[in-house]
Length: 249
Image 1 (spheres, one colour):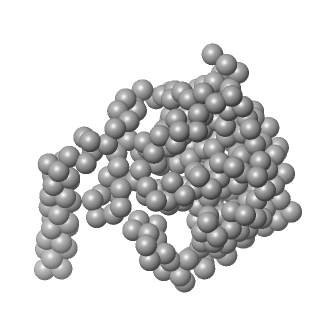
Image 2 (cartoon, helix red, strand yellow; image 1 turned 120 degrees about the vertical axis):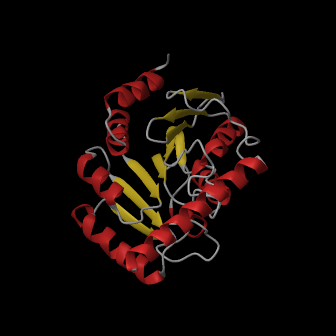
Image 3 (cartoon, helix red, strand yellow; image 1 turned 60 degrees about the vertical axis):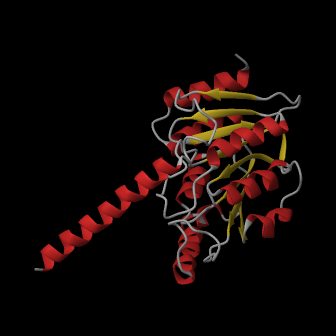
């Protein structure tokens, strides 16, 4: 077991939440320059900036606007996103000298970060196949050799938000991406992943949860399974509507 894997396992063993896990990792890895994609309301950024003593520069990347081609529950209207941006600024105002707010999609603002500048980047933005593809490819060159990319919603099921929404494909795409680039990737608790940009290209997928045994998609896109999920969702919706009508009566 190498030093990095020992560090990761130590973080996993002692953490009690997603926030705690990443704070422990950032502290042990002595992360100085980092970026977060998908800041939303600023809670994660505020936590890390307040508790992460090693952090010197924190890039905050988010469109903070409605996206017509993003079919996910977090896609709000523009006025809501304006409030979220204001909320984020207020929550992180204590670290104004460390934060750099980049308002825009990853493709629109990524060139504000120099190649190899980042020790760590955290992805919690568009979890569709399109989104995770763009974010990983855009960020990889910005990470120094020996640095890391972490992320949220490493969901074992692509139907994280039901068949009414675009599938969540952080997993298994991040694993495919790591193999293509010759990087190590770790499956962590709380539906998280960590990818290491190796000096010597060598792929490995280390599952520290025991839950990610199948990196294929055939079973998840089985038509019978999709129909069943849709039927369950429809039944639940009808049931809630009937309850509402009875309540009114």
